Length: 124
Image (cartoon, rainbow, N blue to C red; front, side, top):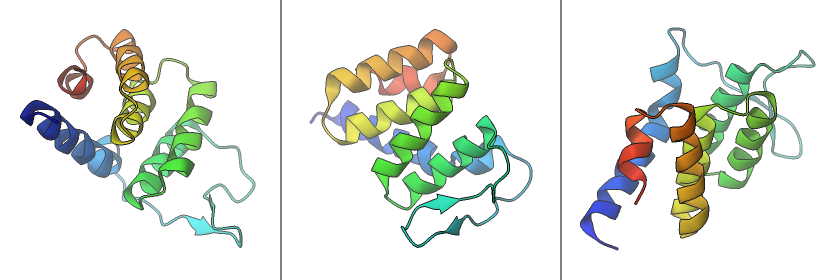
Protein backbone atom coordinates (compact mmCIF):
# COMPACT_ATOMS: atom_id res chain seq x y z
CA UNK A 1 0.00 0.00 0.00
CA UNK A 2 1.56 3.31 -1.04
CA UNK A 3 1.34 6.61 0.85
CA UNK A 4 -1.46 7.95 -1.37
CA UNK A 5 -3.61 4.90 -0.61
CA UNK A 6 -2.90 5.18 3.11
CA UNK A 7 -3.84 8.86 3.21
CA UNK A 8 -6.83 8.17 0.96
CA UNK A 9 -8.05 5.55 3.39
CA UNK A 10 -7.58 7.91 6.31
CA UNK A 11 -9.40 10.74 4.55
CA UNK A 12 -12.15 8.37 3.52
CA UNK A 13 -12.56 7.08 7.05
CA UNK A 14 -12.73 10.61 8.36
CA UNK A 15 -15.59 11.42 5.98
CA UNK A 16 -17.41 8.26 7.02
CA UNK A 17 -16.98 9.05 10.68
CA UNK A 18 -17.91 12.73 10.46
CA UNK A 19 -20.55 12.51 7.74
CA UNK A 20 -23.55 12.80 10.08
CA UNK A 21 -22.61 16.12 11.60
CA UNK A 22 -21.43 17.50 8.27
CA UNK A 23 -24.81 16.79 6.67
CA UNK A 24 -27.18 17.94 9.39
CA UNK A 25 -27.71 20.92 11.63
CA UNK A 26 -29.55 18.97 14.30
CA UNK A 27 -27.81 16.50 16.61
CA UNK A 28 -28.06 12.83 15.78
CA UNK A 29 -30.52 10.76 17.78
CA UNK A 30 -29.28 7.51 19.22
CA UNK A 31 -30.74 4.55 17.31
CA UNK A 32 -32.77 1.92 19.14
CA UNK A 33 -31.35 -1.60 19.11
CA UNK A 34 -33.60 -4.62 18.82
CA UNK A 35 -32.83 -8.09 20.17
CA UNK A 36 -31.14 -9.14 16.93
CA UNK A 37 -28.57 -6.36 17.34
CA UNK A 38 -29.74 -4.34 14.35
CA UNK A 39 -30.87 -0.78 14.69
CA UNK A 40 -34.31 0.64 14.04
CA UNK A 41 -34.65 4.39 14.08
CA UNK A 42 -38.08 4.64 12.56
CA UNK A 43 -40.29 2.91 15.13
CA UNK A 44 -42.63 1.85 12.33
CA UNK A 45 -42.54 5.15 10.42
CA UNK A 46 -41.41 5.38 6.81
CA UNK A 47 -37.63 5.63 6.51
CA UNK A 48 -36.37 8.60 4.50
CA UNK A 49 -33.12 8.61 2.50
CA UNK A 50 -31.67 11.03 5.08
CA UNK A 51 -32.55 8.55 7.86
CA UNK A 52 -30.88 5.74 5.94
CA UNK A 53 -27.75 7.80 5.37
CA UNK A 54 -27.57 8.67 9.05
CA UNK A 55 -28.13 5.06 10.09
CA UNK A 56 -25.50 3.77 7.65
CA UNK A 57 -22.97 6.28 8.96
CA UNK A 58 -23.74 5.29 12.56
CA UNK A 59 -23.32 1.62 11.68
CA UNK A 60 -20.00 2.40 9.97
CA UNK A 61 -18.82 4.40 12.98
CA UNK A 62 -19.63 1.40 15.16
CA UNK A 63 -17.54 -0.83 12.88
CA UNK A 64 -20.54 -2.80 11.63
CA UNK A 65 -19.64 -2.57 7.93
CA UNK A 66 -21.96 -5.40 6.85
CA UNK A 67 -24.99 -3.57 8.28
CA UNK A 68 -23.74 -0.23 6.93
CA UNK A 69 -23.33 -1.73 3.45
CA UNK A 70 -26.88 -3.12 3.53
CA UNK A 71 -28.22 0.25 4.69
CA UNK A 72 -26.38 2.18 1.96
CA UNK A 73 -27.69 -0.29 -0.62
CA UNK A 74 -31.22 0.28 0.69
CA UNK A 75 -30.62 4.03 0.39
CA UNK A 76 -29.60 3.53 -3.24
CA UNK A 77 -32.89 1.71 -3.87
CA UNK A 78 -34.59 5.00 -2.91
CA UNK A 79 -32.03 7.37 -4.48
CA UNK A 80 -29.88 5.70 -7.13
CA UNK A 81 -27.64 8.75 -7.52
CA UNK A 82 -26.83 9.39 -3.85
CA UNK A 83 -23.13 10.26 -3.91
CA UNK A 84 -22.74 9.74 -0.16
CA UNK A 85 -24.04 6.16 -0.33
CA UNK A 86 -21.84 5.35 -3.34
CA UNK A 87 -18.82 6.91 -1.66
CA UNK A 88 -19.31 4.99 1.58
CA UNK A 89 -19.83 1.74 -0.32
CA UNK A 90 -16.54 2.52 -2.06
CA UNK A 91 -14.89 3.08 1.30
CA UNK A 92 -16.21 -0.22 2.64
CA UNK A 93 -14.99 -2.08 -0.45
CA UNK A 94 -11.61 -0.33 -0.26
CA UNK A 95 -11.24 -1.26 3.40
CA UNK A 96 -11.88 -4.88 2.41
CA UNK A 97 -9.23 -4.75 -0.35
CA UNK A 98 -11.91 -5.02 -3.06
CA UNK A 99 -10.27 -2.51 -5.40
CA UNK A 100 -12.49 -3.07 -8.46
CA UNK A 101 -15.68 -2.68 -6.45
CA UNK A 102 -14.28 0.40 -4.67
CA UNK A 103 -13.38 2.05 -7.99
CA UNK A 104 -16.80 1.25 -9.42
CA UNK A 105 -18.54 2.77 -6.40
CA UNK A 106 -16.33 5.88 -6.42
CA UNK A 107 -17.07 6.26 -10.14
CA UNK A 108 -20.80 6.16 -9.39
CA UNK A 109 -20.36 8.83 -6.71
CA UNK A 110 -18.51 10.94 -9.28
CA UNK A 111 -21.24 10.33 -11.86
CA UNK A 112 -23.67 11.89 -9.37
CA UNK A 113 -21.30 14.80 -8.62
CA UNK A 114 -18.18 15.11 -10.76
CA UNK A 115 -16.61 17.50 -8.24
CA UNK A 116 -17.16 15.39 -5.12
CA UNK A 117 -13.69 15.71 -3.61
CA UNK A 118 -13.65 12.66 -1.29
CA UNK A 119 -14.39 10.34 -4.21
CA UNK A 120 -11.91 12.17 -6.44
CA UNK A 121 -9.23 11.81 -3.80
CA UNK A 122 -9.84 8.18 -2.86
CA UNK A 123 -10.27 6.82 -6.38
CA UNK A 124 -6.97 5.27 -7.48
